[in-house]
Amino acid sequence: MLTLERAKELNATMVTEDHLIVHALNVCYAMGAMAKHFGEDPEHWQAIGMLHDYDYQQYPDEHLQHTEKPLLEAGVDPEDVRAILSHGWGICTDVEPVTDLEKSLFTVDELTGIIQACARMRPAGIKDLEVKSFMKKFKDKRFAAKCDREFILKGCELLGMDVKDVAVICIEGMRPHAEELGLAGTGEA
View 1 (cartoon, rainbow, N blue to C red):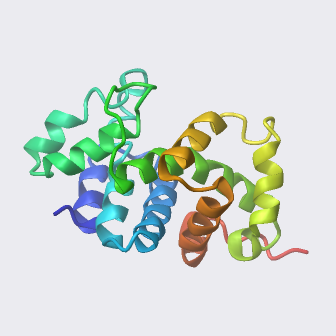
View 2 (view 1 turned 120 degrees about the vertical axis):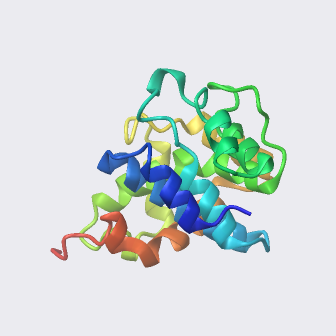
């Protein structure tokens, strides 16, 4: 089974840009929280989240087309590789998310971008971010406009969950890592 340590090692061979590393960590911690919600192994789900954009920096226009072979050759379990590929369903792969892990990754990839943007606007960062504030920004399509709400909603539908409930889980998963994620706020009121 893929460990978080191994996922970080593999990711570091391909991902060096700070914003992509932070995105991987956001997804990693949100996935750990989703695993807890579903009664699964948080570290395993965090590892999948950490590695989900493995080839994006090197091949942004061919995202996930350079992921399967190198990860399988590195000893990553085929089920874990499939989970990573599934987050591109309907965008750049035809791998449909079917497990709770896959559906969660598909959903939180874009969702964490909106959470991050919300937290960065607040003096206390993510520390006091409430789902009510998140939902207000989620409904404003101009806010964090690059985060595709349709994919988030599609993922929530796959999970059989409301976006508000998924957001609460992700915020709670990211909150303890506020410093590492650059979401601790300015401290200015």
